[in-house]
Image 1: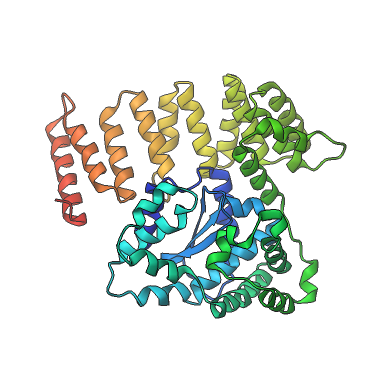
Image 2: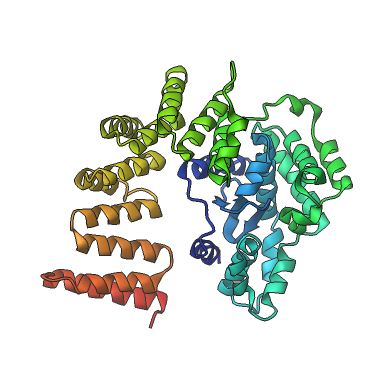
Length: 425
C-alpha cells in the first residue's frame, strides 16, 4: 500500500524535485523519527510541490509535507513540530486503524485514491481520480483525524521534539500561525486544518505541556533558512517584484545573501549571482553556497570553473547524491559522457535513486550506448512500479540492430520475469 501511494504521487508529478531541500527534510525527519516511540521504524519523508499549507501521514510510515507549509513556517522548530506530529500519528496507529476498517476494499485502490485526495486541491485535474464510487468520501473521512487523535499526536509530538533537542515551543507558534486569519485568510482556506482540526483549547493544552525550560532550546538552523530561501525564490511568480525584499544590507545574515544570489539567477543576472556567491564562499564554508556557485558558472558557460567545483565536492562527498547528480548534469551539458557514466555507475550499488538512473540513461544515450540506455530506463520504470513502460523499453532494446543472441535471451527473460512477478499480461 505504501509503494502504491508513493507511485501514485509520482505519477501525478506531485513530488518536489529539489534534491538539497529534500535531503534536508529527510535528515530532519530521521532526527525526529529516531526519538519516536518506534525508533526502529523506517520512515520516509517527502515534499509535495504544492502551495497549500498541508502535511499528512500516509501508508507505511510515509510522511508528506507541502511546500506551502515549509514557506509558512518561520523557523525550524515550527516545521519540526508538524513532522513530529505526523510521526506520532503513525506510531499511535491512527491511520492504520482507519485503513483496517476498510478491509473489504482493495488496498492499492485505497492508496491511489488517498494520493489523489491529497493533491487534488492544488491540481484540479487530479480530482478525476476520485470518481470511484463512495471510496473517495470514505478515504477523506479517514484522513480527517478526530480531536482525540490530534491531542494524542500533539502530546507524543512534543515528547519527540524535546528528545530531539528541538524547541517544543515551535508547535504552539505554528498553531498560532495557522489561526492567524489576517495572514492566510479564513481557516477554511487552510487544507491542514481540514484534516487536523484546531481550536483554542488544543493550543492551550499544547502550551501547558511544553516544559518552560525547553523554551530556551535553539529553535532554528541555517539549513532551514537556506531551504526556505530556495523554495521561496523558485516559487515566486514575480521574481522582479521580489527584489525589494532582498536588498543588500550591512551585516546581513548569510541566508539572505544566498537568497539574493538565487534571485539574481532567476532574473538571469548571472554575473551578479557569481559575484555575490564568490564573496559568500570566501566568508563562509558551506556546501550549498559552493553548489550554487558552480551552477552559476554553469549558467555562464564557465566550464572550467563549474567542473572544478563539482569535482572537488564529489571528492569530499563521494556518495552524496545531490552533489553527484549536479556534477553529472554538468558533465552531460559539456558532452563529457564517459566521465559521467563512470561517476554514476559507482552509485548503483547504493540505495536506489531515480535521478541516478535517469542521468545514467542520458549519459549512455550520449555515448550511443542505446542498449544500456534502454536497460537502465527499464530498471528505472520497474523500480517505480511502471512495469508496462519497463517492458516497452526492453522491447525497444530488442529492436536494435546487431544485438547479440545472448543479450536477446537475457532481455526476453527479463520480460518474462516482469510479467510473472507483477502479473502483466
